[in-house]
Length: 398
Ligand code: IFM
Figure 1 (tube, rainbow, N blue to C red):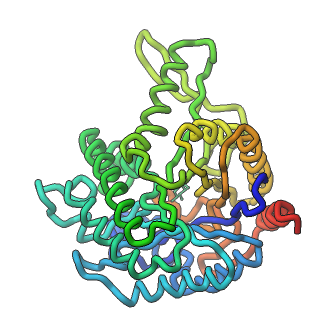
Figure 2 (figure 1 turned 45 degrees about the vertical axis):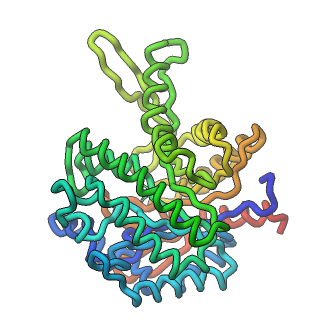
């Protein structure tokens, strides 16, 4: 790594690891699904956070990303819960004591029930309502006052384009809509929410850098010489990877990159179709192609925004832990290659520290550096986590 102070660590999100988040829209929706697809106690990190942080420290991590659960903090509209805030203070203090820098996400897919179900102006609910950005900014203001002294980096919203497409176009996440106009409303409102939060957070403490976490896909054409394939790639890349950056009008102090895979596109004109061609490379347990070069490609594309970059997520479902070590090595090499071409990458956070509730896929996919036995909540460090530890030590010259 080029910088001696490059940050290394891992990420989690509240609903995926805390357990017992019964006041949000996901919990409501999960109740309609089979047991394996209900978050329930998850990894019980709400109670076992000390153990998790001690493990992160043992593994040499110098940074950690977690999210705050809005529905725990603002239990009903305008009613803030000091007990939940006190617990988040304890968690952040524990990280600080361990010498671990904190990346704190304010929205990671879940919404308080009052927001998701309530009738906001124009009869719209949740992120479809024009009122939601202001409600979000009010929650952010409260959190900044209560927790700001323990935060090193703010992340306003996790993967807005993923949330908008899964929940409002593909209809596979709550509220399960399939309506392109709803998606447009959600994206617009999330961009405004980010801009408002940026203002609020900067006012509270101008020294804490603020960004959002962008899921980036490395789009590639099936044939580099086919103009139609290349036009398809340019359009997808603009819409999915870049549009949100334009909507937030560069109100960001760093870029948070979540990178998982590449997508190879084939475009046919008569009749018109765009399809995905599966790359002939190893796949994760979820069938996602492992393609480290794509990380370098996306990082180079981010250079145009002229901000420091942190990899806020990168990882794979790999229950056997047979691919994770190579995955980490190759993706870190891709970061080094991007740095050599002038990319200002300053940190890498692996997804995830521990196994977690993988949304609509439930508990089967195993993303953790640390394995969770959900019956006993026992934590077991996977061998790849030690490989990652050695990389961290090497980069520090330990
Ligand atoms: O688990 C998710 C996370 O919540 C958001 N980014 C992708 C991860 C793996 O699917």
